[in-house]
Length: 347
Image (cartoon, one colour):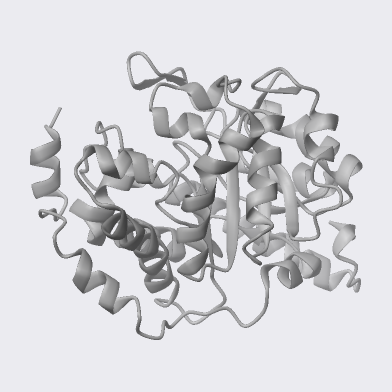
């Protein structure tokens, strides 16, 4: 395996000292702004998410063994992140999720990055996705990824939850991250891979302060959150939060997603977001994937029928699979139009 230093070179890296240049670039007007809100698009039909950013970066030759994972490339190889986003746009994705999932001021600080430079890296994550979105002449939304506290510890804690932190402590951790991302002007915040209800409560409170729409998606297993809480309770937290445009699951087994989609729709009455993993299993100790892929793009019809309106893939789901989903969703939309109905709930 390449060293982190080799990876920085091979993936277009540098010292990260060009942050100021990118920060200046980010002040320029962006192309690729969507013509309508994501909420309006979800009311009209199904919207296609991208797939796993890390798997595409690895396919491009990047070594993600650093504790910052793909967020390291915001400093060392931003052109690789833009290329990965562009691959998903070309595959048909209508929403790009930024490379900020594992980013934190604390994590950047451990590599010697000051707070001002770290804030510029958060902004860069939005800028890179926006540039890729502008490579096509259609609506593409940029979702700023707000990963869980457990992602930042880089020890698999996002698949366990229950960190021993209070809701208030989690709020204090997430607030500067959300503020930095919101200031960069994404179309929506993706509160994703949330393992338990305490963290969901903290994220919803802080995100409610920034004025942006959000989606909330849990990582689940066996009909519960990863912290073993009932999904009805978990999804119910979105009630009363008008800024939440979709509720659902990601970073889970495709089979676990099937049941969760229906539960999310029944509990919240909101559009459901669903983007599971390939079906392979992450071994945090060995930092590798085991098992075989079980993601079947053909599941999308059942997800739509159950209430899903924002669909895609997470870890190990690449552009080829997103392209298959795009074809299926295009056929579904054509059949829907031929049926003469404009009711988005008709599936």
